[in-house]
Image 1 (tube, rainbow, N blue to C red):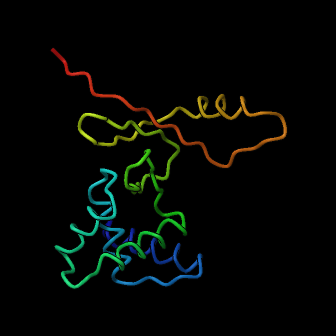
Image 2: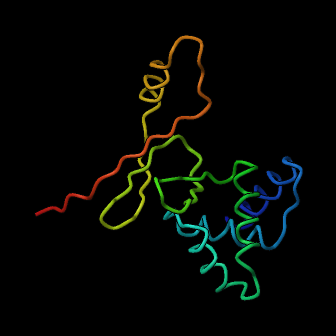
Amino acid sequence: MSTATIHSDALAQRLVDSGLRSTPQREVVYGVLLKKRDHPTADEVFARVKAERPGISLATVYNCLEALVSCDLVRTVNFERSPTRYCPNLRPHAHFHDVQTGKTHDVDLPPQLLEQVRAVLPRGFDANSVEIIFRGKARHAR
């Protein structure tokens, strides 16, 4: 069984579990996000999908992205005053946003670090998610 088939089956099942159905448009949008994991905006996803499905509209891409987020297949990543970006990496991780290039990178977090972060919550509070965003620029080796 190919990786594409496995992703398609996982997508279809997750959508069904969320009360939605799998559509060719949702499949191509999800495939685009999995193919190049660079945290694209909806406009960037639209441009990539348009190459595969020329008749697709920006509204359809937005609707597909919303469906993928609502059934927990994709996460949104938001930076102040910037367009929403989309991340298919569902493992606990942080993001590094390079302010010089505009690129966003995943940063793996050790599970014990996440436990320490949750431990600083005030008594009586429980977080079901933690978002950590680093901002800066890449240091270039000399």
